[in-house]
Amino acid sequence: MIRDSGFVRVRVFQTAERLARALAADIARCVRRRPNIVLGLPTGRTPIPLYRELVALYRRGGVDFSRATTFNLDEFVGIAADDPRSYHAFMRQHLFDHVNLHARRTYVLDGTAADLTRECDRYERAIARAGGIDIQLLGLGANGHIGFNEPAAALVAKTHRTALRDASRRANASWFDNQLRAVPHEALSMGMATILHARRVVLIATGAMKARCVEKMIRGPVTPKIPASFLQLHQHAEVWLDASAAARLQPARDD
Ligand code: GLP
Image (cartoon, rainbow, N blue to C red; front, side, top):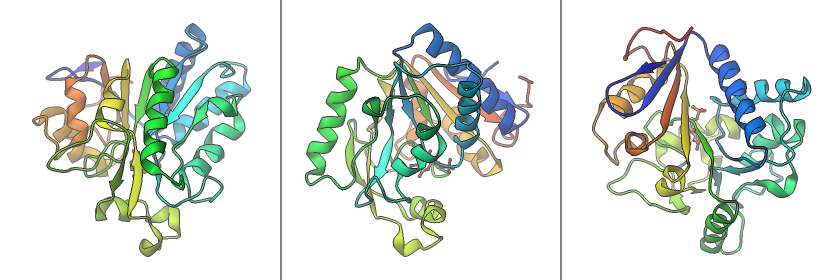
């Protein structure tokens, strides 16, 4: 463990695979200790190896999700849960269909709800009813976003409807057959407070493309231009990196 300047705990692994294995083992330990754990979950390319490891652990009998609850970070507006391009579908493909999470306790925002404001309020209430989030896992947008809290003059605290930046729409085009036109312009996302109220926050970033942003979020000022920099304000925030994403910090040390 490297304790970097500031408050964020940074862990660096040689490869994304090693990171995924270590984080899956850590999460499994937490689930064993607290079977009714509440997890906040991200989508994107970054967590795919983690989900693969969690599924493998589950198959080996190393973790039981039957009493756990999950809340996903975000979903596209206008994309139905059964649409293969939805984040719902992503979660089914990579995790939900392969482990014993109870369908009633896997929450994902509904981007096709008739009243999106009510949908966001409903989500906040559901998180509160579940007792709050124990571990919030996050990916990192190359522009510094977390969930879909995009860089802006001001950030939003609660779960909300938000416009996507062009950079984020481009980054998501691969889920839409690389058709930028097909990528929604809006999403629903947990807000900054929804994320920061989690008892523990673990952001994962892998690959050289994230290195500059990782440096800014950890070393730079806390600024809405880099929403991930707000993790510096959290009591228990961790950033787990592979060597490429950590290239602008310090040499890899964890393994
Ligand atoms: C997406 C999601 C984020 C995710 C990020 C990084 O747009 N809304 O929750 O963390 O971008 O994605 P990736 O892991 O594919 O780089």
